[in-house]
Length: 170
Image (tube, rainbow, N blue to C red; front, side, top):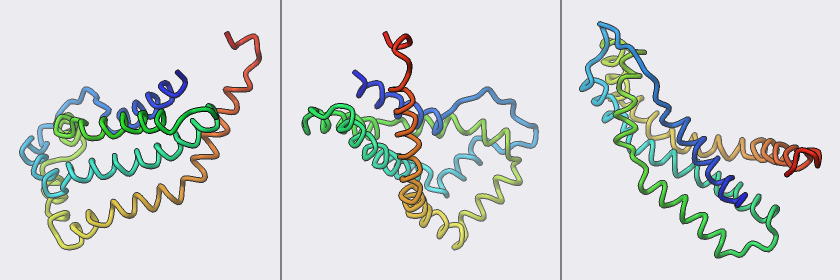
């Protein structure tokens, strides 16, 4: 049961940070929906989001595997594999196009048409394309570098939860 709660918490936090939807008012000088979608296309946003999700889930999977083995020493590899298959299915079926659609009004709120056009020009340039090409590796390396800190923070939080007074545990 705790395994499901832990996996759900990770999925919810990733999903919430990736696709938080807010009500936005669009400025009169905002870019059109088509302008923002063009920027997303130039940035290869669908591929970027999919790669980022795969990297984040790979990191989360490693943490989950360790935590499951600590919390449930008798857990079988089949049970772990079943949980991991659930994560993989979530990644495969994640509604990236819908999420990008949800993001359009947010971009319209924060960027003018001139700014969106400038970003599109930048990301169309060789430097912008190199930036986009390198970001998955930079992100993966950053996550790997930060993993010991993340793991220590997760371990400390779980330890605090486990050490709650008996009167609070029921």
